[in-house]
Length: 324
Ligand code: TXA
Ligand code: MG
Image (cartoon, rainbow, N blue to C red; front, side, top):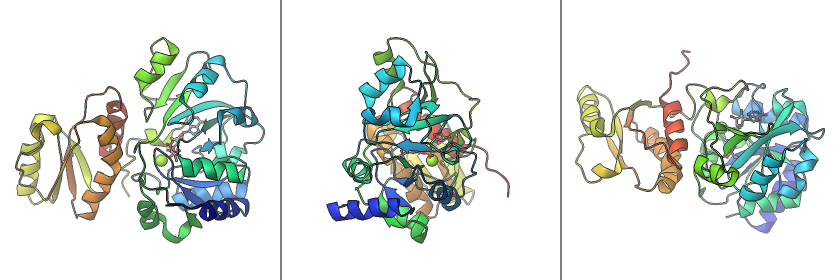
């Protein structure tokens, strides 16, 4: 776990234009000084992410919001007050402190206050905003432990702050809050139901958005193994058939089948609670890759509460891959 001296060291690295991997409650981020275009450019280089894809600026508290954005609608303030610190990202009009390098050239910027003591201590010690995408290579599974980051990015990161395993496990919910009526651009750690309870009206989850959201590419959040989604009742039969055909099959066994014997290479029992499932999801995908699976058979949870974000990530993981 990170100590005070680690946090000071990390703040120094940021000030010197370096990259710091930092824990948040959702996933680990790959952070740089938001106001340093050269440091921001290095994030894209290390991730292998196209420079047109915008980043999230992490700030230390809702009271700093107006330093980074302009024209904040009342609904956005309401959401910030209610959910920050927490897994909610608000897309708002870009303020002058945010370089276009961080927004992929957009006149809007995504901002959030992470709910993690180590991230908050770093933001407080550093004093500025930290742009941070998830600390994984473009298109692959987000890291939920410091070890995941070290394995995936190694020496490309100047300093890794270890804050233990992430509590939420899936990324933040991204809300377009530029207009009067907000909409969800990416489902995540704050549920649609939670947002609607605060707003007092239903909120849309558009399937495609005009803005570029790399998390919305067909194949994203993907392990090496191919992911196949089937009805929950068909998971076992599908897995056993593929195993018989010579695949090394990894199985996400739905909770209602918890003790069922399955003839497959690796079987992971999906937790019954969606909070636990969200926390384990990316670790499960990584584990099945590590155990040598070439095919993963899973089913979608009910798309309510955190199930909406889990189903979104599983669909992306199963999406068509770019041919190389
Ligand atoms: O939980 C999280 O959100 C994590 C932690 C580290 O905070 N971060 C994260 O960042 O998931 P990243 O870069 O992997 O995903 C951020 C998403 C991208 O899909 C990006 O396109 C979208 O936010 N985004 C950023 N700025 C935007 C903008 N101005 N308009 C629309 N979408 C934006
Ligand atoms: Mg990401």
